[in-house]
Length: 400
Image (cartoon, rainbow, N blue to C red; front, side):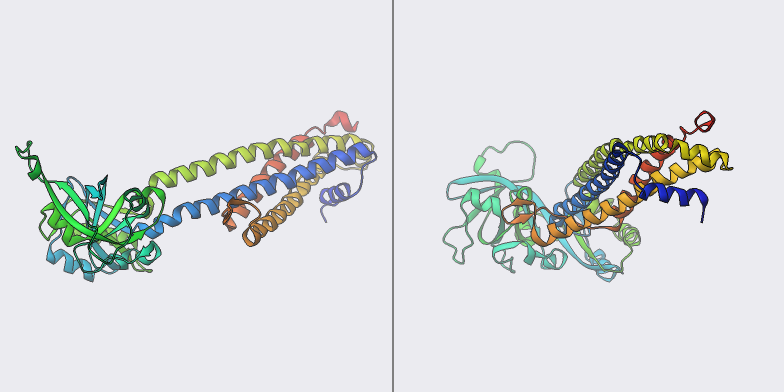
């Protein structure tokens, strides 16, 4: 066994000559344990929070979404549709027509967006997961599904009769101001058959209707769309699918995946995660430099032993390694214990909801291998640096 490593283990697990040295060592080891545990809890908490925040996008956003590079609409021909149907990697796709509209229901008004979708839309987006009341659209062009916030604001409830109709208005295309304001808008009437809920922002943004009704409202031809939403096959190569889509669609289009559609949210979550990691790491740095203090105190306490080792032939490098190994061992063992305690707390949180966001919603957490790796290397590297600084205090003067 390596001489320095053997002596370091003896020093680590044997008490010092005074209670002060023992207390300082215990405080240093406790700091390592708490620092690693806190960092693991933060990373696991943010991993869970990220999953919780992004789960709504998995309900509502497609795998790929195609936009026109300029303007509101682009042409999607029958030939292009046939090619897209046969394209490898694309499981389903849905044509979308979207526009801002004005709603009027029982003398209550609201401006929002209408999203016209075809019969394939439930295959691209799991509409069963977002419907909270009523049902999804059928082939009837006089039906809509409204967001939860919109339905509350307009006091709409799903109805099976046509006694209370929602009026939908949109400005007619053209230039200038018409002489007769009553002819400035196209309008349609529809009955609300369902209420969906995704999150507060989306619940107040959209009403869904059939694409036929929206095209009629906007006076668009059957080959005009504002978007195309796609669901990819599990084995699909996204980059390859993108290239094939560009070749199929002759017009200039922009293709975005789910992450790009939510790039602001991703950036915000990643920034918060990074800032929290840096703050906890800074706290861990302060705590881990207690290790340096403990090693220096141990050097002072073992000064006579150090002189003896030097006199019997141990080199300064070997003696420095003793205290470097001692600090490193303390850091590694403390980190492993901290990770174990952090893992236990996260499992208890997942099982029993120790920390609740609301009375019915526990704080989300997720255990990842990356969290273990990041914590272990962060804490051990800082501990190694602290031990290296402390052990470098051993010089010729000390052993003479």
